[in-house]
Image 1 (spheres, rainbow, N blue to C red):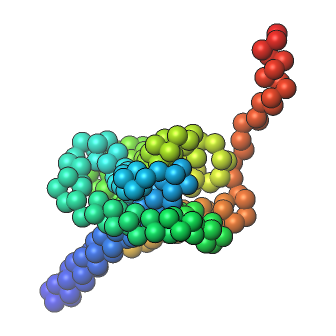
Image 2: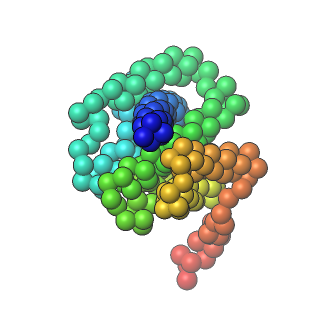
Length: 235
């Protein structure tokens, strides 16, 4: 009897610790995405309001898509703490933009690495929430990917760019999809929750980093050359 109580207590502690870790990582992911949004705003020469709005969109956009798809209350309406974190992050980045000191962000790939970190965190969190709510495997994977890439898509759309996830050939949506599927497989195998959480997260992060540093990617559609467009116009 004592062993059963001890086992139950241990499982409860682990579940609580994992829940706390998820909250901490959600805040870190929000900061990471907000950095990418604020820097994108500065590169597009937006004003302070634009930088704050764009950082907020990137930070909470994916989670908003997740909650709408799952038909549950949007998380930041009841608890706007993550919105304030995004706003504070944007305001912290603005002084660097005003001094035109964003070269360090480019040299050290700070924006790309931040984005990779946020992507990995939110894909795993979104997939896990969907499965916990009883979503089918396909739906859970879609929700997880939307949670991960939704903010980046909004960032590019509001920056008047084609979303990077669709055109640069890097492992971005592909990494998110692989991680979400991996999460579901590990979850279906009833592996320990910490493994189900960490393995897909590290896989997504590793694929994204390798794509950035080694050029790993997926084939791109051939670009139509200007001369070919001119020939088509005269045809």
